[in-house]
Image 1 (spheres, one colour):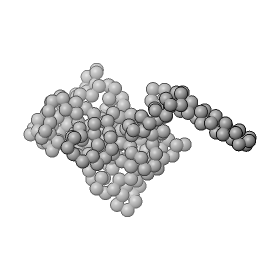
Image 2 (cartoon, one colour; image 1 turned 180 degrees about the vertical axis):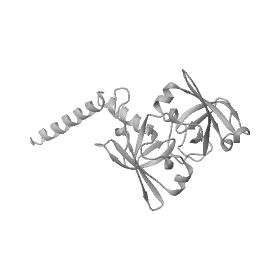
Image 3 (cartoon, one colour; image 1 turned 45 degrees about the vertical axis):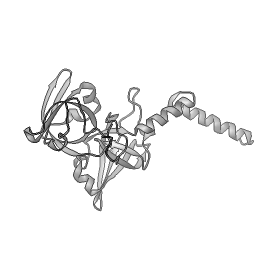
Image 4 (cartoon, helix red, strand yellow; image 1 turned 90 degrees about the vertical axis):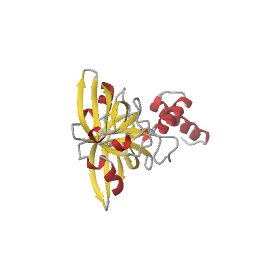
Length: 236
């Protein structure tokens, strides 16, 4: 479990690909390796990965992780190149303040930066969600203004949602811009998206309570309830 508060920016030092995925070596990461062990989880750009090797002194401190093809398909990590910076966060400790939100670091999908504009010292960014498919349904039910979303591992507050365009927006204060990679991404760049896990559980519970059938089933039940209420009041 993670909080979405980025601890450090590491650098992609080496990429070794094979048929099953690839091994990433992340350097310049000494500040987060002081208590590291083989098998620990570190979120890299919002994807929970397992440390397979590390050295807190070599290459400014490095660690290695292996990414399966599923992870490469679901995230932007397959697009990373040697020299790219990545957001890093260690798994949450029970003794620390919980400043972000519950982040699993299980990326739901990727989106695209479609707009970025300054607002004083702040930066506003808008993202396009992909077309939903049977295997990857729409994430819009879990995106609400002032709700949480995780982008490239960063816990952020949603400032606006446009359901018709399948877009949502966030704002980065100056401090956050300096601490994460998202502020450097141009229009057209890919971002990793994880929606609020609490929203997922609430949505599934509501669907189950209303007899299943997914979003269309919920819509039909609500329409029927409204029609019955109007009928009882003699309103046609």
